Image 1 (tube, one colour):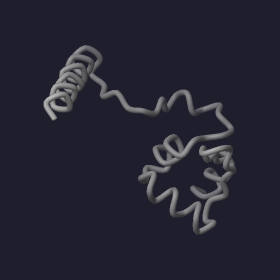
Image 2 (spheres, rainbow, N blue to C red):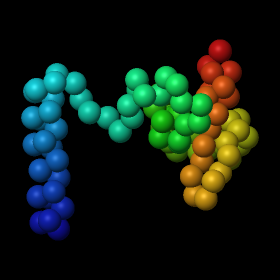
Image 3 (cartoon, rainbow, N blue to C red):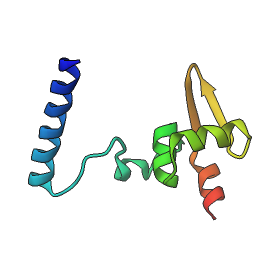
Length: 86
């Protein structure tokens, strides 16, 4: 239990330092890197749509969004998301 608390404190300190230096909060998704990508992962697509990954997975299960599953990874075409937004 103490290991988890120490690891969390360390991550928070690193985030504080990065935020104070760059003035930006680091996220899992590199938004400028998404510009030319044709296939997106669940994390990238949910960040782009500003929804949770749970909602996106539910939409995939309900066939509201079409995805291709390769192994355990879902890949979603950018054109499907663009059509959903418009």
